[in-house]
Image 1 (tube, rainbow, N blue to C red):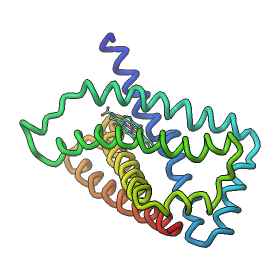
Image 2: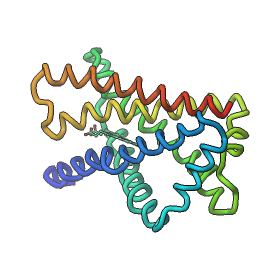
Image 3: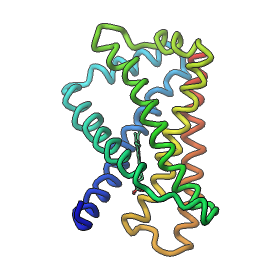
Length: 202
Ligand code: HEM
């Protein structure tokens, strides 16, 4: 790929990770947190999301196509990236490598999660509190969901750090240090929201 073309693809990949995919992740975490208020509150929230007008169009253009592009191009980046941790084992090189590893784990998790919820719904299953409680009653699936949700949130939060660098928002070492603290805070806060939701089904 010509270097100039690659630059624009990388920029688009970076942007799509935040808008719309990152925004969707935030919305999904917040709506699912209704589970902490009991089965009725969760089912009401889930049915409201399912009843939105233009649902299929919104899903395809705001979720599936951007996520597919980010994931496929992300795999290309992950497997062609030069991981530096052997040479320089400091924090940022580890984060650079973990960004790629968490991308691959996130892909496996999302593929399975979409299969057993959204695809199952298309074949007639009802996605509700009981369905999730049933899935999470298996200790293996519980561990898989915990790992998948934490990996996705890590990938998003750490991705915000590199997004800010890619788009010239944090240029100085000091601003990048502040961004490190802010993104660690985002990681901890969203992990709390996500894990709280998972354990509400158990
Ligand atoms: C909910 C799902 C996802 C979200 C919210 C998300 C978000 C992000 C964000 C915000 C970035 C930072 C962009 C930048 O560095 O400027 C990023 C980078 C990255 N993502 Fe994702 N992502 C998701 C899924 C995936 C998947 C499934 C893969 C597949 C392997 C992936 C692979 C990557 C890679 C390799 C990078 C690093 C790009 C670079 O350093 O240039 N992501 N992601």
